[in-house]
Image 1 (tube, helix red, strand yellow):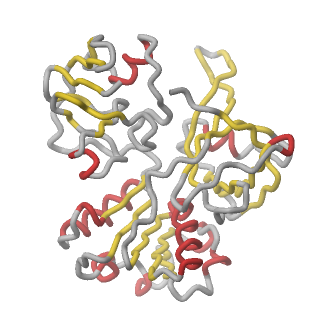
Image 2 (image 1 turned 90 degrees about the horizontal axis):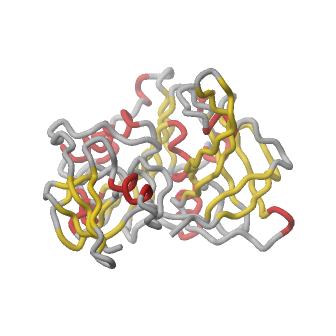
Length: 328
């Protein structure tokens, strides 16, 4: 199903740091409030950018995902965007937005929600604070039990410090300050507990470190929740991608997926109305159910339980069997 786009306008812009812009969005034209969302949700943003093709500049469109970091229930959306020097164009374009500029966004999706756990351990690295900031607001409103560990290279690079500084449940860890306050993952995680959930968001290396230490300490996969801003590195033991066939259960139609293409690419090229967004296996928009066949999961959005339950991300994952039958 194709994404339904909402028209938005920038109603406020502030600088959280020298490189992080906070943008408040409202419905364009005074329309009804944006759809409600829960902490951990993100939206797609459709961005018009100038792309260089063969030495010529032409207008192109990018779709990027940004976490909602403001308090739910206001009818507006707040984003915090890092001007990343390694950006593929999205963050640079977002940093050109000013009050009054219009853009198109999707309704919120949440693949990183708070669970029903009694206690919550939150680990944010850099701009990974964005979904966790919304979680802190929700947990405070509900009287939830949590600790947030916020890790940043330096205090000047940390967004929302003023909002969090007086919160006794927040611990800051700055790389360039007293070594005694740096993150000790093992100590902060403690002993695995069945009533505790762990949430991690930030750069890939930070996330891999925290999740790796949690797994080494015996935390079960079901207790570990993550949201990535970019696809993680392939597993060291991942098989080389091979060709396979996808079959659509609704029609019986079969499509060959070559080694160098994704199943999603092939479906879209053949006119199949397959939802998609990030095409990196991190947003969950394209997820479908497998009815037959053995998948080779390569996404960074589905939990082990969801994968075991037959869910599949065709933008990055592949097949170990010759044929995968999809519930499409």
